[in-house]
Image (tube, chains in turn purple, yellow):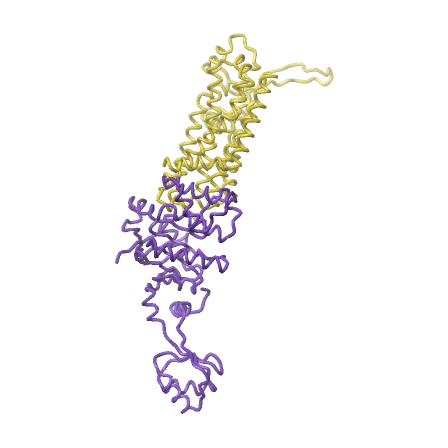
Length: 304
Length: 300
């Protein structure tokens, strides 16, 4: 498999505070790589390092095979663009002027390409309005347009949907999917909104306390997520005894509700429950969410 | 690098602060020119006011790059840190030249003829070269500071602190150098209500030897005292009567080591040719320190 970005034992400390600890990550080409982690897990720091905004304390990374301390990495960076925390745009310029500046920085002429980008992100009608007067969603979309100016192959997006309204979230999601599918752009995206991330990502990297604790593709994740049955029952103790009889894991949610993990048929479950004097009122399939997978992984239910 | 420079300079036209600064410089130039034309009066004050203006423009433009996050973009799309650093330094310098022209063109258009009647053209050119170098050092120093810190408040605090230190050290050195070697002590007879005797006594505050050399160096190194030195130098031509032609008088002051440089005009005449070298030194120090810090610093 070809990787756009590989990090190896990447560490970053600010004075005595270590933010990244031996972070090892591989971003496959053409993927939408979701970086998942709590606040302060080190996601933004990792992205800053990869963008060259900061230098690692130890460890290394390579971008398109070019080591971070090799001069050739600057050529690799020309294929990369990023929005870290907030979009990088000149607040005193219009959307079009911002794109003109970006094209000029890249040594390219803007013209139709700038118009196409504005159309792509839905900012064609902003006219002479300065970016400083844009809404957060408009700024975010302009930031994405600016990053796309040089036709990059790899985009890093740090919390791109933070602060967006539901419609904005859908627009950004569709834009990212469109870029990935139609232009084969690799996207590294971090987000707190895991349900949203699960609609985008083809690969995941889970971060905790500066470590990448697990890397997994979306397919593998789907397979490894535990299936469960959500049961509405008449007696919780009876349910517990029946689950133990079937040698299955369970979780009592309330007096009348419980989760049953593992593979079993509804028939055998009903039989076991009735032998324990417990009535099964309703039963539904329940897939474990990305959020609970992550919480299980980090061993707690901290702030995700 | 050229693309960066072009973008930075193009970007300037969008900055209101640059246009305001240019207007302020024009006004200062007009004011200085009118003073020269009407009253044959030259003071470096108008030119001193221009120094914080050029420094402020460099600071605000670079600080805006930090706050808009556009400095990040330049790094993420593959420009190296030295390229970014020097592009900002060069664009700030070009911006400073434009502002300097806004200052001196109206000055010369209004007061140039009057000035040339008082001072030889070569000396006028040199005086403005000294002022130009002070502007260049202030602009490049401020730009380097602005590139090394992210927050506008910190940038302004560091720059103001540096400027105050420079003014304080230079001003203090100039004051201590101005103490005369001797002073007259007068004996007063209260009964007669008149001075009855006078004698010259050595001044114990007078600094000599190596310490005086250090003070002279501090005087020359301070951009603040360089501007004051320009004033003192020009004042020789404007106000000082001498029994020899003025240019000859200046040469005597420069070369006759028996003349005491506690006289500020003599000190200025002797130092002015070294001012640009010290300004150049500041530029070199700012660039060296700036690039070392900027290459290593974390950009948020």
